Image 1: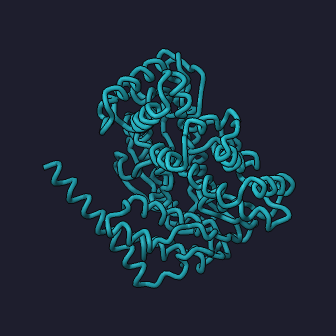
Image 2 (image 1 turned 135 degrees about the vertical axis):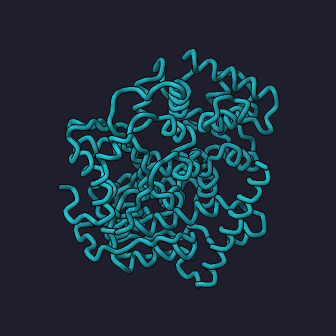
Image 3 (image 1 turned 60 degrees about the horizontal axis):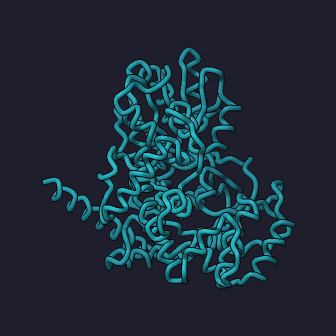
Length: 483
């Protein structure tokens, strides 16, 4: 039994699974933090041994953990690994298309390759069938180069990226039956699905589906994820609201963001028996650049990113500033002439880590960064009680105590910019969600070093009103366009 003290919400879902499978319904489960969604999914699988399940997880690590804990009537994959089994020809894989790779493959200028990459990223993450549907301000040359590149990937003359795997699968199965014979498909962390992944789920017919996620924890907009939960075609919706992880004091802080800022109606409810077996301490920052500052303060700590990876980009930028020879991984920087071009490149490609790494390199310098890197190499231990990680890496994890870094932006300042038209409401909402995710990692204690901890009720109300006002304005404008 994976649900030793099942709530009424959980019991209702498990009770209705046979009907969901029989009727081949599409069901959405909104699961707030710490409400036992993983235990629920395992309970569903074990309670239906006569049915065959496909369990799609968000990450390879989650898939590996699930495989060790589910019976033989369940296959576990990430969506990428599942789709890879069925695309026409595997080819040589690459995580994503860099500007440098596109430049070298097409033999074009670096500046042109930036525009081609932007168009390719937009198209491959989208649910559109035709490339031209993603064209905004690109000129004919950019469009033609993008077409040539996609044709070369199709022929496997170019590498196959993770995004391309999903796109080819989506196109191939748009009007075909979903491959393999399953009675029910479980999709975890669905809130961070890209439009192409969402379209794959919407194309599934003649099989029951459970889509599990929390729109309040959708924090991967920078990767192309867009409002996936609201865009899923479903027959019924369930909620998991009772939290087994955190104390009432921690939940009060989380609910202040959820209700008072994001304007949600349903708060996280305490179970009355928060878990006491959760250990560990985490330092959670907004950026890797801020994370590096904590390296010198602890004799032993665990890093989610290996030190070589954590320090690689800022040290490369130190070399770039001095016009030195760059490592192969960062050779593309040699095409960027100056700081202004670097900032523009960061904005155009959506690579926010690049600019924050530059600011870190500028502030600390090479000697200081090398010293911190050596300290990290000596102190990094996977068995350490303290873990250093950024907010994106913290999702799905839990700790007894957390400290939230001071580099989370001021939500009030951002709301003022949104209200004045200087910033988009989507950026503000995602920063609110990131802050919410950080708060909900704790079971017992939070040390909040952000400026958001002291927001007054009036300031929270202002942020909420800005978000709701801009959202209403967007809906009104969308209806006008449709009319």
